[in-house]
Image 1: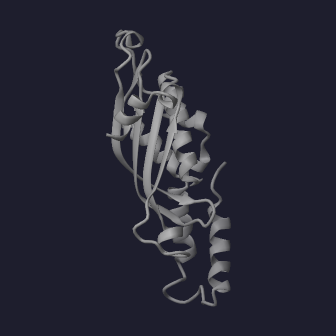
Image 2: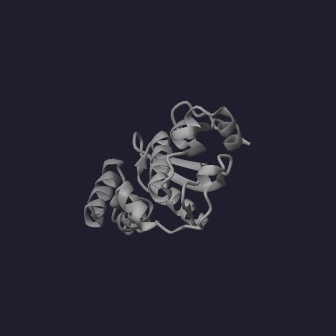
Image 3: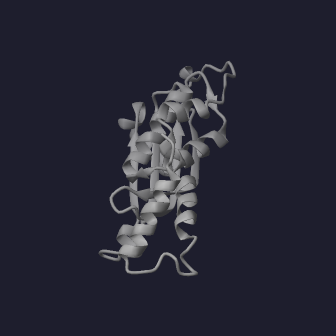
Length: 192
């Protein structure tokens, strides 16, 4: 699905008019185009399914080590910065930190690819809970590991800048696949 920038421009112009402003005044005349360009960038992930993102970042290494024989090995990447937009209000979800962990099976993923997966998943109208599930599913597809965990902590402007306006509130979500679901020691290591 391609993002229709012309339609976005048209509708942003209508929103400006509905707000009672003049979209042809100096400060606003290029706003519909700028918003369309911004939306194309920040919603890029909407162009791809999880399977397509997995293929896009499927850079793994098979090092010949038998990870299945060593059950305590874990790959853990912490504090991946992302932002996204809430599908309910189109409000910014910001100051988000993602932690991704997996137990290697036969291959390991390039570490930068984990951050790239998190970025691309966030570039959709999203729920924080779904961001975690999507990242976990994609990492599992790429690595072949059924054992993946994702923890996300972030702020939602639909709670901090509008509505109840609780500026200090943070939302934490976790997604556990495979052994992470029942192994509390693995879960503790994720949150260390």
